[in-house]
Image 1 (cartoon, rainbow, N blue to C red):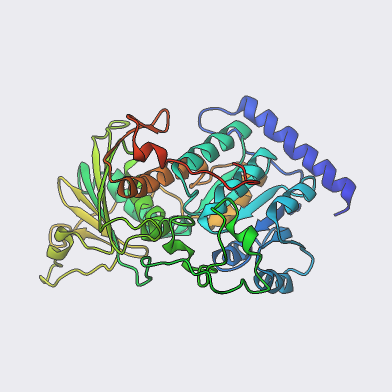
Image 2: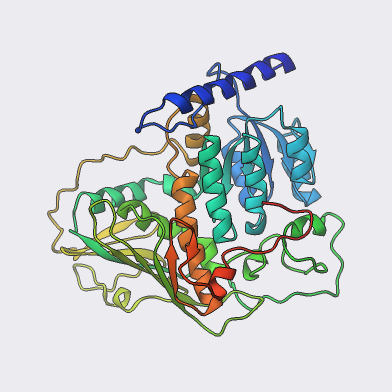
Length: 439
């Protein structure tokens, strides 16, 4: 595609987005733009190329990945071998500025602490954004990205890829069709083998030549290179992640938010081991109280990080054998229960539901989590984890961390994205960025 046709297509995308924003009805998403030709490939820039980011690049490779940025030259060079025509950068800010008139959309696959600066910059430039979960590192950042996506009328998707699986859809249909009656109690537990505690900063080694440590830190406090943080163990540290809750909360709590039409909770209370100022806890329990909404009653959801609720230990199948889901979501209804993990679910008690006729499927199977996003940019439609939905989910997840770290029960005012009263929790809804970094 030559530069003239690229500019023409960009102009068309912009004009289409504005026109749709003025005319779309309540059942449409007004930020959707339509490309000039279905044969045109979207021009996408990737921020991050290793680990989960590599999977995102692969997931969007049916379009054109034209630029990539990574602070680690090893992972950047490995990605370039697969995409030799993509232009390479170390600093995503430089990439976005230089590629501004050449790209339509941006993939954000960095560690959590740089999600928001990267996504916000792209949104302000008018680029559609796909961002890994959790959407942000702080509650305030989540609200900023949600508002930006609305204001700019852009297509967004958070990277909760399991949301695209058929199993979640079938569970949502069961809950929403009333298979177990009214649901006001949910337990979510995650027991994953990764350790998210006892992280310590080390200062006696130098960063390897392939890693730009200053850029890796991004908005986080400046400190000497910490061995073992990159590429994965950053989740152990509050400065970069939110431990097991930040890693898996958006995956497992997503099912409850979807099935029960949950948004932000209004009361959050947590318990766990003594707070460590540096590293995340080995276990954590958080109670979320969600108000009544859209005809359903209030919902009490409890997160059990690296613990299993007592009720889960009592569950038995029709032959009275223990039911053991290592990590799961348990919906407790008036008539029965549904337990689900990523790939399977059960109606309980099994003997009660032996002859149960499942509802007709009313949620279409996904075309793919990344393709939902790219097709919505091109042809119009709705992404299932747009920032309006996933921003509220992320706020809920991160409010659990704030309650634990502050030692306070939180009364959350959804409209203002703030705590009802001043205190440590309010101060922890956001963080101070290092000089040179902006939201």
